Length: 360
DNA sequence: GACTCGTGGGA
DNA sequence: TTCCCAAGAGT
Picture 1 (spheres, chains in turn red, green, brown):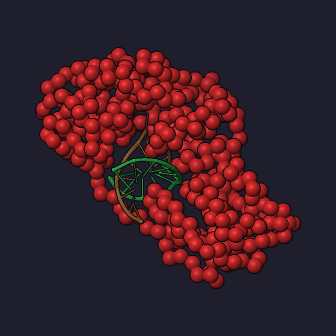
Picture 2 (picture 1 turned 90 degrees about the vertical axis):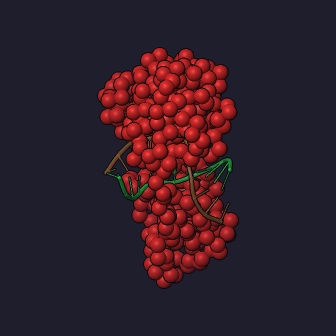
Picture 3 (picture 1 turned 135 degrees about the horizontal axis):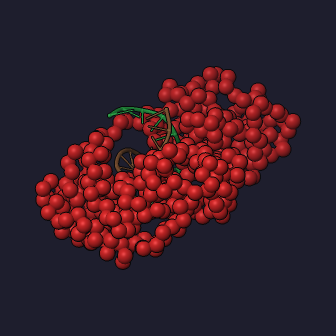
């Protein structure tokens, strides 16, 4: 590792990158122009949404949240279910629960002002090491060293770090910290992320376009595209379930709100059997039907990929009288499910059921 | 440290 | 089709 990147002074690397950022910074809805400083509420909201999520996916949600809740006080005053509904489709729903908790703490306990340093930010729910450093740098111009997937990749290549992730994480964080300039640390962090997103991309990095071309050990050694190394991933099992599509004569469908923690916690669902690797035969499945009715199996299946398992669903449908009552039920108009705030896995089940003739 | 926790797009 | 991966956090 005692090659190009170490010979150049770290300040020269930072300077090159900031000059590149002045010309190539991406224009993003939550971002101030180079040299500027964005609203801390906007920075926090965007950073939470951007956790493991692409900028293109986040943009419409960011606009919608700001329109509904222009300040952290507005968000804190919103009912939790309304926040969950607005988050529907974005995934990792613990983020929405923690976002709401965090808004309430900032609004009620901190007078609406976010802490300006990493330690203070770290105490808030949903703000981990990355997000605390990112907010401190971007919103408050603190010399913090955020380490996301992009920056891990850029740093691993720049210094030719061969140790695999996640073990090498702290080492990479230390190398990043040495690069952070005292001037414009927020722009520097965003420049590193932009570089990772547009030039130092995972496969086939565009080294000819890179402002750090001459400093990069990984490029000099010829293996930048192979870095960072990562531990092999585990295989994903399949979990199977039967979903019950219950259409009432008044044109509404039976939904339920899932328990507040865990998978899809706090979100609406189409009632299902347990999700098991073994699957279900007809007799066993129908014992879990939410109401006694004449159930019939719809053709086809719904497939949805979660992070650590594949979800495979068979749908059974039934029509029930308008006066049917079910404990804990949420009856949603079948023609207005688009506004109901279903997570994507459940939206797929609903679309499949309607397409296969379960529309009532 | 190892798991859990969504979703969409690109190669 | 399948795999990877994206501004990670909480337990």
